[in-house]
Image: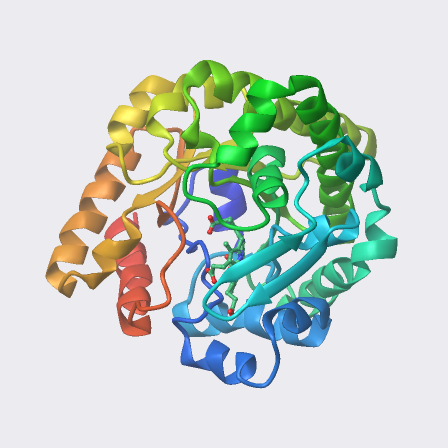
Length: 348
Ligand code: CP3
């Protein structure tokens, strides 16, 4: 079993720096587009055989050290009772938007196996199919990032409706977030029970806040989830690493360190050694190459990979990744080369 990724998560000695890529299963791969050409995205998420197949594609093609479940952070929104659709070139559409007491009251905290059983079935199938080749990462959106989609009804630029709710009706926001938090906690437990060997919490939009608002309106809910997960895992005698990724990490590092996570995701807007200095050298970090630097010539990518590896070496553990997801226009050949570079340049 290639357990380099799990060892790095625990801060243990590794023979090379493990690497996986956020959004490694996706449209930049022709093999993904071939399957996607025959089914829509949500059908793929809800069909364990298809979801497992595209989860494994990047393991075969890229030689990465971990698999990440093929799914989406918005799956629980549908399970809570909101309408979810993905429209070509428009992204996700959630309806009705959560804007008032009536829409919040209609949401429920679902049983994950009853409403999202296809995700747990995919995990169970993947553990069989991967057969120990690489560990499997499960994931969920952080409550705040998930809530922005539910409130805005989709992707947003300035998060106006979200901030309006937070500032004009904080009690409503809190009652809504309590439901989202409970849903995500139970969902992550179900993924772990089904066999996820690490979980990542995506807080893509956490960085739209200043630190005080981030702590109150985003981080506090993540702290609750991680505390609950850790107690639950302790009771089961297991310890699955929790990774917390926040977009626009730089202004929030000291706060992120209080999340309770085992691994901190870092985006590319800060040098990794500066981030480690602020987090403390006893931490495990994940990141942080700019995804768009994959459009550079290979020699320049290699220089940047070396730099990230160098800067990451001051932490107790480093998992190489991009600072955010790989974009669909990326050449798969560059991503294959990136993984090879990380392995070659970090081998001890
Ligand atoms: O990383 C992986 O390979 C695993 C699968 C995964 C997807 N989405 C598949 C996906 C993961 C971990 C996500 C997370 C996700 N989804 C996030 C957090 C990380 C981030 O990228 O910020 C967010 C914010 C979403 C919500 C989402 N899903 C949006 C806004 C969109 C539309 C934009 C886009 O990239 O198309 C999606 C769709 C989506 N999720 C696709 C994939 C492969 C594209 C669907 C398609 O094939 O058309």
